Image 1 (cartoon, rainbow, N blue to C red):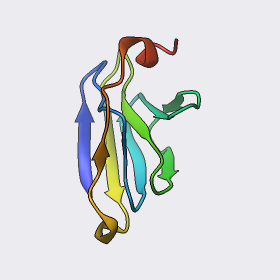
Image 2 (cartoon, one colour; image 1 turned 180 degrees about the vertical axis):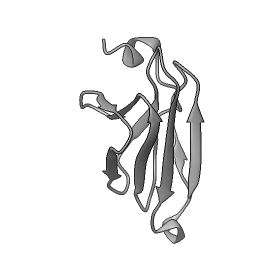
Image 3 (cartoon, rainbow, N blue to C red; image 1 turned 90 degrees about the vertical axis):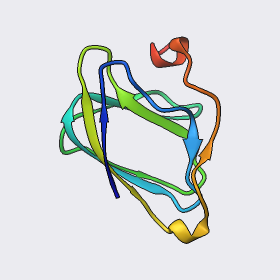
Length: 94
């Protein structure tokens, strides 16, 4: 379990978790996106259950920091798989 803090506009790269992940938004305004799907806005109290091996990213929106708790589930199935950075076009919903 990790408490993750993003500055405005900060985000991680596309990635997946072999055992899945749970995000619990705790402060600010953030984004979550699965590959091929629209961006979801996250506010404090929102929970996202990410299935195993789903490629996704998460981070802060452009004018607010964002904090969430990240819980990697079934970690015995392997480490996070990292892919390409999220482009400006992807981040800006284009």
